[in-house]
Length: 289
Image (cartoon, rainbow, N blue to C red; front, side, top):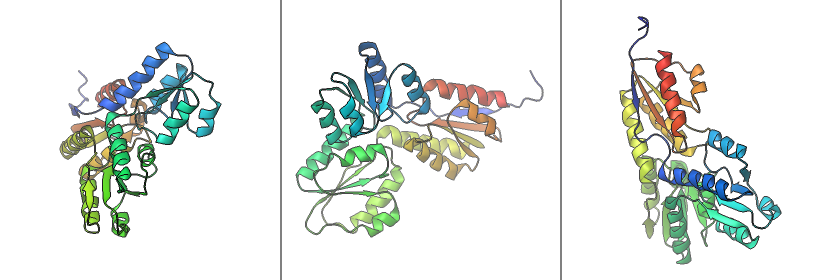
């Protein structure tokens, strides 16, 4: 054994990697490759560039607009990604006589149903989440009434509730659990009739709690995930608060730019990060010492 090598402890989060909804969506697309030729996903199936690249190599194309749907030939397969989409898009796919395969995460689908039902009853909908995230875009598209998206304390403070309507609050599934409760607390002071449905996915909460715990014990922390992954960004924020030496990477190659310090290295990964990438990062971290 190399005398210069130092022993390091690597703490890998048990919750790191694909969650149920993501695994189901990715498997759905690979299953479709076996059955169909013309396969499209409406938006990238998950927020991981490596997975999307692999699917593209197998002939799966990504479409993002209504115009692109209208140009597809009848009988083509369109897979709705794990984040879900609007009712309008689902209806358009069916109207164009395309094969709709819905890989929306069941936890996201549950929010669609709540929003559709409560808006039908006359409630104004508040979504706690990032207005630019595709999951939130999709949720908005199932409401029959006005929708307000709130992502910060300042937005919650400036929210003006309707005088004559009940308000129903839901959350983006990957939102920060602690922040959700803080924003709800602010809104509740303004609204008389409010229905609160905590729709943050259990897997998200567990992942955030475990990441925070590992980060408190680590000298350096690595968070693995795609650049556009919302839940990975939140993991990074949570870890950074506990461990200043926290790095956000996409693959093992990115470790070349990372300065790991100390004897305890923590690793976690977002819900869209494949197992092989996590294992490769873990192996390369050992190699660095």
